[in-house]
Structure formats: structure tokens, C-alpha cells
Length: 158
Image 1 (spheres, helix red, strand yellow):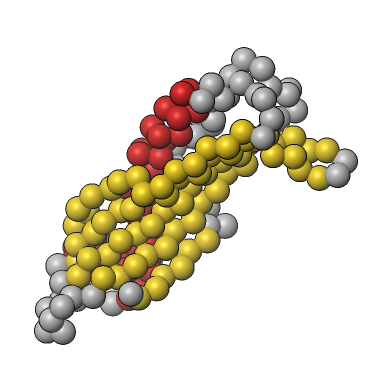
Image 2: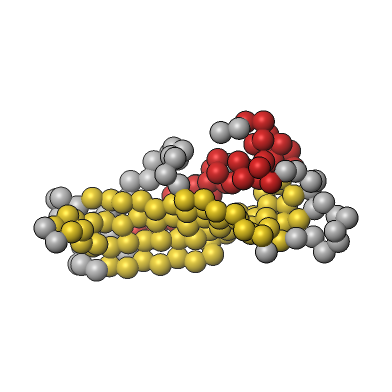
């Protein structure tokens, strides 16, 4: 993590909005918050990508960046044939940023890797808890966000 690059990005970016883009919930076996296999495990998903919406004027250094964050969890049991998925929940959030001045792409990449998730995480936690309750699924374990090196990250220009 390059704190200087992240600081450069923080100075140039302003969070405009965080919103739910899409969500899905599936149940493949009849489990509920009161009735589920003892050996059930939770697996988590995280993917971050960014779309840069270029300014209309090349002289204008301002642009909008939409960071797409896909989060999810699923409940599984391990069987002799492999993993059996019992249920899963996935949500995609958009964190919309305004870039007010020119900064290097490396600064934006560092910001996407280490900061965007902190803006989205509280929305994800509330959504996952609420939807799990509404679907009568076991309550997921979604603790405070801890950075992991196994995240899938990609950046693309639009």
C-alpha cells in the first residue's frame, strides 16, 4: 500500500454517492435461521472494478469514476463429491466519485484497492443482514472490513 499515492487520490476525489446496483438471493436447499446443517460454512466474495467516465472537454481535468463493488456470501457444506451450495446472496454497489483535478492512474489504482471498499462496506453489511433476515436465512458473519491480498481488482476506461 502506497500511502502517498492514496493521499494524492483522497485530495482529488470526492464521494458523490453509494447505491445498490443489483442484488440476488438464492436458496438451493430449505435452510432457515433456525434449521441448518451443523457443518455448514460461509464463503465470502469481493470484487472491485472501476469505470472512468471521461470529461467532455479534453482540457477539463474533472471526471466521474464509478467504482463497482461486488460482494457476496454463500453457505456450503462439504460432501464427498465436493461443495454443495445451500444458499447465496450477492450484491453490487456503485461508489460514485468526482475527480476534481488530474492525478496519476497509479494513485487511482491504489485508492481503488484500499479505500473504495471502506466506503461501501457499511452499506453491504446492512443489506446482507436485512436481506438474510427477510429471507429467514442464518445471519451471516460480516465483521469489520479487513484488507486481504486475495481481492480481485481490475480497472478499465470507458
